[in-house]
Every structure is written in structure tokens, then in C-alpha cells.
Image (cartoon, rainbow over all chains, first blue to last red; front, side):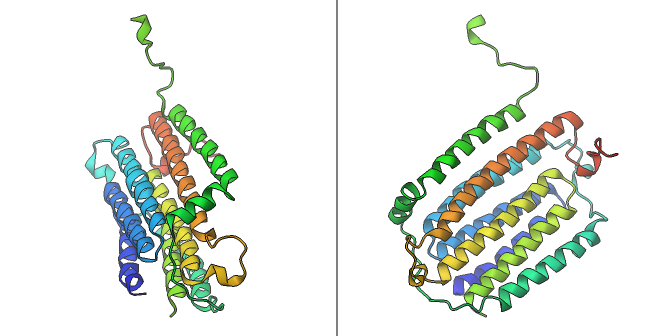
Length: 170
Length: 109
């Protein structure tokens, strides 16, 4: 409970920064901070392996990928890079506030189910055993998905019309 | 306020912030940032229900790992989604020299 009380405001502040920062790179770095704090929350709640995976995949890969994409798509014009507050903010709030109201209402008043407290602890041995026995088909499907994604992303990002030079021709 | 409802509230606010970013940002990459926030909010819910409610007490047959299992797969799929999304955005950038969503209106009737 105490780590949750400390981490929740920090996570919210970092997320607000990710949504509100005007410079895209700052927003992406705040996203990385949010994801890292969520990883710390997982560690504090006893899901250590999930926290480490979150740190490696989200902070280490996704956030860095986003920062690099921002740097690639930068056009050198500093004034244009700053994202002005859009006029659509009111529309955005009109859509977001009802969603938040419904979610928060059900989170606060709807969770009066009978909870059975326990010492939540995720051992890696247990996780691996479940992952590769009853969830093995899903792991295989995920492997196929990731392979397809890797090929697809490489195809998308390829410069069109250019083929890598064949070293044998030289 | 129980820890569970505190955690669920945290994840609903995170989800709403992600939705706000998706709706108001004009840079396509920052829209992707909002989507990542929303995915993380969903993951927080799985971990919350796993951490604050003993899964074995509900006569479960399987080991009590549904929550973390879902999060593992969700993280992997989120990484794949970010890779494909950014590849598409980079391809669009190569065509239009811009990632501003307001300028991408060539399909507009």
C-alpha cells in the first residue's frame, strides 16, 4: 500500500508531462519516465519478472524507438517542432472526461467484491512452467507474430526502389 | 479506499490521459505515445487484480498466473504494435515530409 501511495502521484505527474509537454522529445522522455515508474510499481507489488520485462521492453526498446523516430522526422526548424496547443483540446476533454468519470466511478464504487488478501509473489520458475506448458500455443503464435512484424517493419522502412548492393558483383 | 480501488483509479486516469493525447496531439508519433499510455493502464489492471486478490482461493484449477500471463503477452504485442506503427509513420514521412496528422488529408473527400 505504501509504495502504491508514493508511486501513484509520481506516475500521474509523469503521464501528465507526456500528454502536456510541448516539445515532442520532452513528451517522449516523460513517457519513458512513466513506463519506468510503472515498472517500479510492478516490482513493489511482487511481480518482479513482469517489472523487469516492462523495463527492458518498454523503457529499453519502445521509448528509445519513439525518441529515435522523433529525431529522424525532425526537420531542423525549432519553431515548427514545438507543438502548439491545438484547438481540439476542448473536444478532446469533452470526450475524455466522461470516459474518465465512468472508469473512475466503477473503480471506486464498483470494486466491492470479496477480496482474499494474499502475499502476491511471482516466481520465475512457476511463470516459465506455465508459459511453456499450458500457454505454449500462445507463445508459438506470438513468435510467428513477432517474426511477421520484424519482416513487415523492415519492408516498410526500406527505401523504395533500392536493393542492397550485392558484394559479389564488385 | 482499498489498494485495489486506488490502483484501478490510477489506471483509469492513465487511460484517460492516453486518450486525451490520442485525441489532441497532432504529431503522429505523439499519438503513438498516447496509445502506449493506454496499453499500460490496461496492464496495471491485470497486475492489480492478481496482486490484491488471492487467485488460488477461488477454486482455480490452473496456477494463479492469469494476470501476469496476460501482461507478458500484452507487453510483447505492444512492442510489435509500436514497431509497425513507427515504420508506417516513417514511410508516411518519407512521402509527405511531415508527421503532422492535419496535413495528411489526401484521402479527404
